[in-house]
Image 1 (cartoon, rainbow, N blue to C red):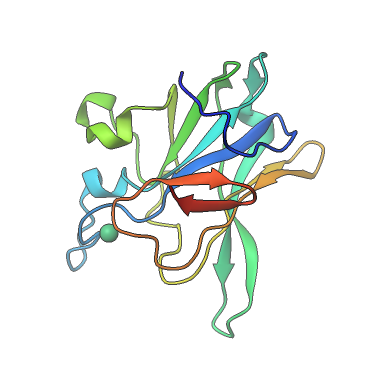
Image 2: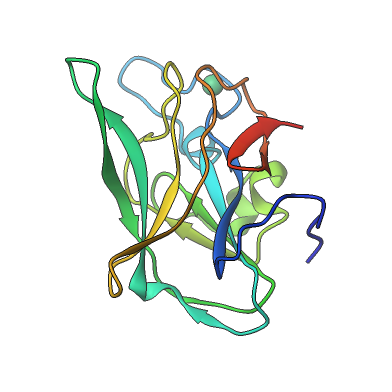
Length: 166
Ligand SMILES: [Ca+2]
């Protein structure tokens, strides 16, 4: 798996390496959410170590805003599966989809694909912060923030503690 070492990488075993928080297209058509657009909303988690990691100890969180404008971290999904060393797990919104059914941009660049089973979750009109939490040790493993209004269909890259347009 190609992974650029030019990214700043904190000394955590798992890091948020990329995100595509705004799938290309309109996202919603009245009540209908096209599955091939929903699967295009994702966050990549990179195993920086050379050992396999059991992801079931970890959960993915994001910044949820309340009506008064304040925010708090809310769980997106519990993770699952074994992530091999130097490999990437892509956490997609929506239900399970075979790789053959995914648009190429959402399929390539990841070793395993996980699904939240939920609707869109990553904020578009406000900043958001994917965060990896170890529920066993009760520690935050890594987090990275992107600015409000991420461009349509763009993969944000990790730089420092941010996810930015490369
Ligand atoms: Ca969109």
